[in-house]
Image (cartoon, rainbow, N blue to C red; front, side):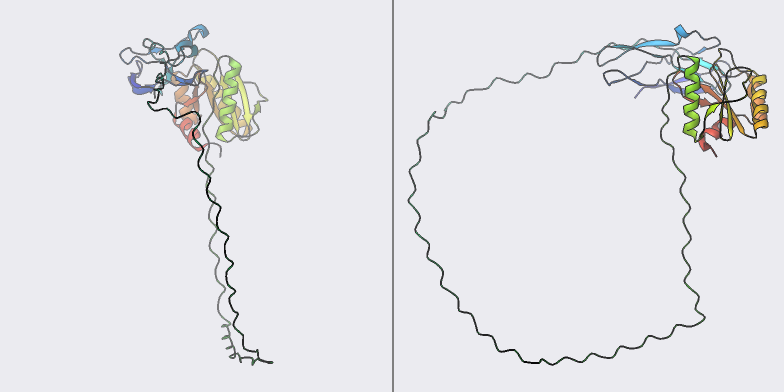
Amino acid sequence: MPESVPVRCPVCRRAHVCSAPSYPCACGAPTAVRLDGAAGPAVLAHRAWDEEWVTVRCAACGRGNQWPHPELGCPCGTVLRLALSDPPPAALPSPGPTAPAPTPSPDPEPAHPPAPAPAPPPAPAQPPAPTPTPALPPAPAHPPTPALPPTPAAPPAPASAPPPASPPAAAPAPARRGPFRPVTIRTARDAVTATALYLRWLGYRGIRRADQRPPSGVGLAAHGLVAQVDPALRPAAPRDVECLWLTAMTESAGCAYFSLAGYDEDARACADTLGVPLFVLGLTGIPTPVNGPGRALAEAGAA
């Protein structure tokens, strides 16, 4: 299990405890980067795709794999890039124990043992004597039939007795969601795919491209929800949140905003006022809620 390290946001000074995600190697062994707890995180203001990946060497087979650089979305809207320590050296598989050579037996058995002496034939068995069968008494021609006692009559039920009440039906238990299976985000299309999979995991059906195109990003629509996916490398502004809220009002549906670079303080304040759920998309494809309506939607799912 990866080790957890304390991380403090340099903007709001809020303390967090983070652990690097683990990914499976091609050989099947889990691999994870090592976080540096002494070095502070860096504020991610601009993204460059060449700097989003880090090479992690598998400790089991020594293969070098490229995984997303660990990041953390702070509730204040700041995206932090975590510091890494030196990767651990690859461990070589140790050879197994050598089987000892067989020790010759001091008294080897002869190649051809002597045949045993033939046994004498068994004596013929004597047949058992027949057992005499006892004579049975003759059966009567017409055996007497025993008389049965009269059956007592059941007492009449009272006319005013109410019928027994049936037990109340138990309420159906709410369906539990399974674990969310994300996809790694490498392009803007991957961000839209990860958002569609997350909305389907929340319980929304009929996910499709929205008829009305948003000012920035890509719009998604489902039964009772309008979502906006913003893969831009700048934080979302209050105008983006307001446009999504107005679109949801015209459709008489809820809304949710998914951003890859986070949100500025004015956008977060506007979303809290309008009740718009905000999510930050990580490169691993897992959306993280960053305000109260977002956390409520992630816990409750589709209504």
